[in-house]
Length: 157
Image 1 (cartoon, rainbow, N blue to C red):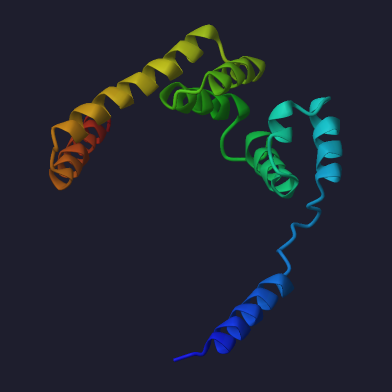
Image 2 (image 1 turned 180 degrees about the vertical axis):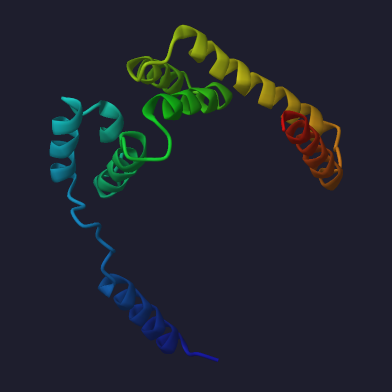
């Protein structure tokens, strides 16, 4: 059993070790540099970025810039924003709904496409509620789904 002196020494050693650890840094994790890039890209720095602690700004911006604003991804901008709207409608987040609706329009989405994205979100939510609430067997559901898709595929050939 450790003596009180030994316990104090162990705690001091552990605290010293923790203080010696340096946090991992992104390539350019400075909030100032990131804010400059946001300003250059968007024309301003929305307050939503300023809600983050400085250490999180670079990573959050890299995620948005690398996926959402990146034109060289598998999904085009309109599709990404319609997906964002569908998810936002389910969360629900009034900020996200407004943002992704306007971003979808900016990326060429029609009012009808916006309505359809929200309707699809509602359909998925409805059936998720029904299937989960009814405790439908997942293995049976997967088998039936595979059978349906196989039949549809066979009809289309």
